[in-house]
Image (cartoon, rainbow, N blue to C red; front, side, top):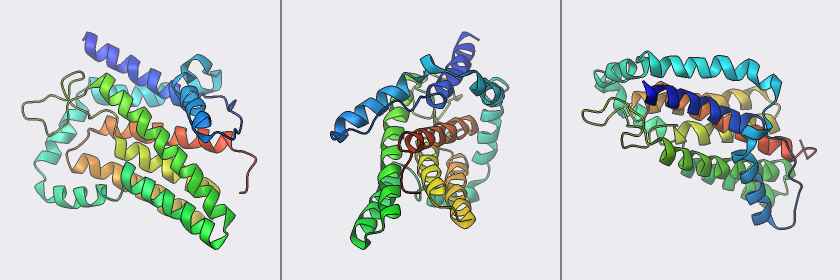
Length: 240
């Protein structure tokens, strides 16, 4: 019971940590220093929570908490275990997302934008790369702290501090971070549909492939989205 209560409190704290960052970091010539400043802002954001954030943090946290507390996470994964036909397609789709592919896609946008003198593409690639890198580091740290068992662990129960790297989903987080930046910088509804559609498909594939529980991808996706929003906010006003 203690572990469950602590894990639910941790989920809330993690959401707060990436939802309420003030865009106080200023543009600096030293990109490494700016990156470090941004990352510190993301980790220390719980000290800057705003009252308006509570309106959506509470229901979202309650949803994630319900998945963990009621065992719905485990039940969904057990159902996935019996649906072997989903595993192959799910793992194929999941390869489209995650840190590596999203950094590659960001770098490609940046490179193409520079070569073609397309400022919007270059800026989008730059911001997306920042968002993905910050998200990778943040999620990596959380995984070490939480140490949740993966659904595929033999005799596992999806417990926290049980030996694993399930919570939160890195694929969901980095893909949503990338999608958030791209969807914001381009006004076309089709760009938004494709960006968020890919992020959603990759997130669901992590459940279908038995790599993550539903709460892992839910919180991972939110973290990525909020980090993306922070990077966008810090860089305004910019070419848009």
